[in-house]
Length: 280
Image (cartoon, rainbow, N blue to C red; front, side, top):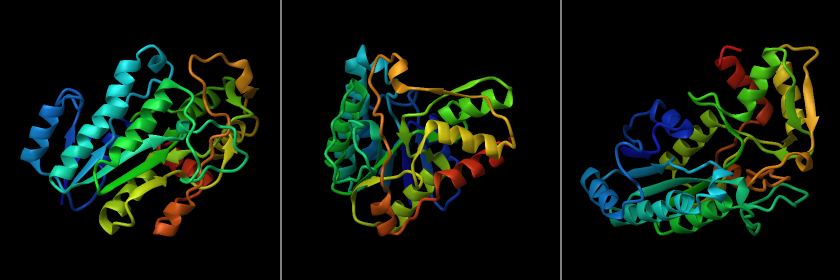
């Protein structure tokens, strides 16, 4: 089986290309090809003829997208449609990743795949358009992830909290924003499950089990690090001025993925595995 991974230098893409498995993996970075160039992508994929296209490329600068709307739409939306049509032309499977930001964040229980999206930022709108355009490939999986952590790049919120706590510095954490974190390693495993086992094509929430405020996440990080008196600084979402709005309640239900045959571990277990693997 031959896989093409776009965004191969990013957090998720690099973890995917380094994953073990009996497959030939070709990674594309930004320097290899412009995925917004329809003709270049079409011709390259027609020549390569992968069995699966895994799109990890994304414009994920949420606040910057408010001012650079064209780039956000091109990378998160139009490029997905280009890849989907190229996949359809060679009967390949398309795997694409989206975000919890497509929801307004006003719910009181975890969002399901059947809940209506209400994107409230340019970034969120561009990602929702990407979800729609991914469906141009008859064989497609769209996985919504959130609060992604892990992989070779230590740039996630969980990394920032862990680094500050380890250094004995105050770690600001939201006490009123609820999330379902996604461990890169588990997202990759779920993706391989879909590629190999082929459950029903469509949209899935691919997050670790459970939900928590960022304060609770910080407390779990401190426990994993063996810190008895962590300096966690509770902050309200209302007190932080951000260019683009974030969903305040962003928990996602992964029950559909579990029903398809892949059970995501809890977010607590995922954080423990990550911090142990990072040598914390």
